[in-house]
Image (cartoon, rainbow, N blue to C red; front, side, top):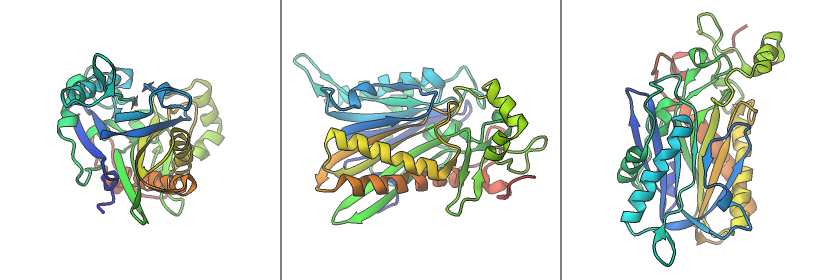
Amino acid sequence: MNNTITDVPGVEVGHAHDRDALTGCTVVLCRKGAVGGVDQRGGAPGTRETDLLRPMHWVQQVHAIVLAGGSAYGLDAAGGVMRYLEAEGIGFEMRVAKVPIVPAAIFFDLDIGRADVRPDAAMGEAACRAASSGPVAQGCVGAGVGASVGRLFGAPFATKSGIGTASIDLGEGLVVGALVVVNAVGDVLDEKGAILAGTRMPPDGRRFADTLAVLKSAQGRQILRFAAGSNSSTVIGVVATNAKLSKEHTNKVAQMAHDGLARAVRPAHTMLDGDTLFALATGEVEADVNLVGAFAAEAVAAAIRSAVRAAEPMGGLPAARTLRSDPGP
């Protein structure tokens, strides 16, 4: 066990990024296929191939999930992942070709790096070539390069975030893991409810403002009125397990996993976020969906906290490790 999502057998993760432009993508590969599910709760999503993951749709398995920056442009990275998988002979069997099934979710990172450089097919393919089943790098790598958290006052008063991961051994061979990019409008809380990273208080940005308290104020209501930060924040991620689950149950795991998001991010699932979690079940171990879903939420909360703890100052933004943990006045 390495306490990352690759503790789930059959799951590989690869990163690719441009540290000058502050953008990147991360791919989760399941070369043998996995039952897929999704639950999308934020009001400003950017996604690809999510409808086919829902019950009552024909396709049962997916071969990769892509998480990328670059706003809607970043969805291009999935094309490179498809190209890589096709070359490997992996995909949904059709009469004339194998078609890789590659859902994706993106987030907005154009305001802290170069807006004219985004993840593309070449970057998606590079992430696949870098993929392995070893320990997953965290923080400002892959899709996490452009992530920030606490975006209520916009990028200048956010805190640098990144990508994080965690896994939980449930015994008898059953494992649940999560991989999450944290770019939320809200604050990330530690295990005791204190702010780890989030919106910083103007004018000097040295202390946390407490996003929820700001929203209650007249200033916060004015921000909401004009929807500052709209379509520029989100938490996107993947939960994976080696449990044998149906498509309906895999979607239920994705739904339950959002409880972990709500425990670690305050507020969560706003109209200013695009919060989307995918679920993958590789089908090796008999397990109860309630057990898997409950600990998927725990893994997501741990992955979110790891994302901000592993982040480093970048793009003019401080990281959690460089800021005080108590809220401002």
